[in-house]
Length: 494
Image 1 (cartoon, rainbow, N blue to C red):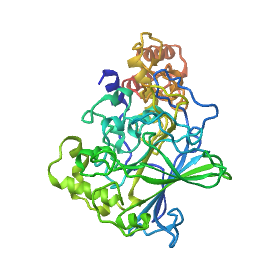
Image 2: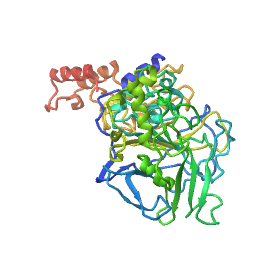
Image 3: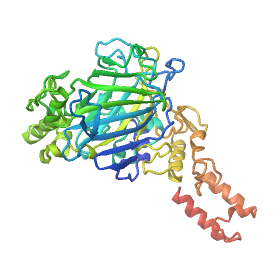
Image 4: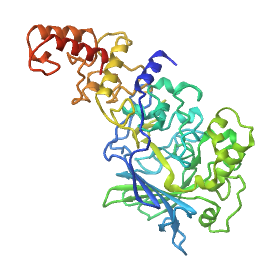
């Protein structure tokens, strides 16, 4: 890790909050996680930060995620029609992702031998990941490093903020943090996520049903049901698992169905997954007798089957390295710890595709739920401390780009990034400090954006001039005590 990245991460870490933000406990049987609407911004990942987008291409903007204990209607062949179930005795979970505007199923992005064809289903393809901590334990679960680099903890800093949860210490502050192994802090691989909804463009999407002939591609008012490997157990469990039937030994990535539905009146797209919590639910979805747990992703699958595999592995005593790190705590857990969907905690990152293939994969647009733009220290609030952290970063790294000019140009932006680049323009400088107009640092007397010896000279000049601007203790008169009080502030910093 370079000194630049190490110091950037150290300056950004602060005491985090304990809970994921945005959750509304509207009912015992479901949870609603709300994201700020209209906050989508473009965050490219290609070397030149210039990869093309289609004219009018939608920037995915998530409004909310609803996670429900679910029971389909009796005698109904559609799992999407039904009602809430008792969360303590449910066999199925329903996950609804609600987006502003029109987004459509993703095509492939040239991965795993697939063609680059992102717009095969429409001009607004959806890419990204919803990570789910199903056992409410941030010390179980995670991903292989290369996979984790595309997920939430690795990319929150691109949006000028840090998670305000206890996972803040594992979030990347700069792009150099992504090139470490899982053993080196900040350990973005150790996300605590056990399952992920993956819109990766890395597998084929197969349309199964379309609402009418007017939907050859997914457009306004359309409803589609598609299949693909959209719901997967996270890859950190790979070497702990005996699973077969997936895309590789140890992977639990079954083929599942999703419903994409656009509502014209609200101009919202809802993406819905109904999945089995246990084998009874797996049988319901298959409209067949439930199959026993058999450690295969090729037939009836469920959360319970995936968890039973982890508990067995954790109790075996044979795990090492990353597999042990993310799995061993399952030894003292039960299946029921993971099959109550009202305890699940989601994070997400969403985006879209370039119009032409580049060396970047995704154009990120939205992230959440506990990442507040401008909260660079991850304490859950925007304050003078955040402004001071940005100013300190500038003062310490000004000149690293070869020019001492009160700003820091981020190398190789947008492949490179920094949490202190609050506005995401590739430069940490005056515009980022201006994000905090109401947060004035008392030690920064000349308001240059940084605390340095020039503030002392500026204060003394003002004090000797007789200006009450130097009356820092607000006594109404200038005394030598003002000098002492200012120096105390200066040595304390912001």
